[in-house]
Image 1 (spheres, rainbow, N blue to C red):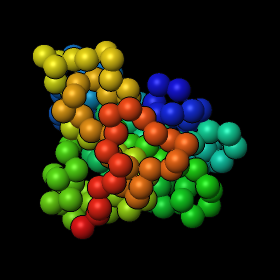
Image 2: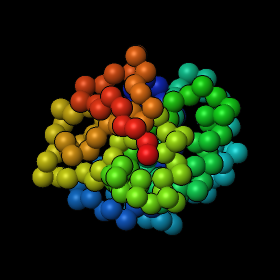
Image 3: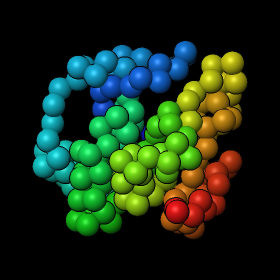
Length: 156
């Protein structure tokens, strides 16, 4: 329940080059860390929990954008689950890179931006510093309103 509203199946990936000081998950920075799982295996885990939506975190899923795009596409085509994704990139950086931007249409919510330790604020929902934004990419579901969120960011 810390990885977005309600019950969630969280997929944590290995690899992050942002290396934010004070990161809550620095063990995920190593691109050779963790263990490999293919899209089919992850999808089976996600489908097995009918009650949970999905969270992509890490590391940073945008460093494995091809696999996460395939997984997100399959989740959206084969289930009714929402997908939240955390990244150290900003939405604007992602939109400026067509390779990274391929994941955006499949996400419901993007929590963007690097964690800034000097701005740490434990009162924020689902983020560690106020520069990080909770962006509903396709409009917020009426039962999924989180204080401090941005209602809609049109994709270009």
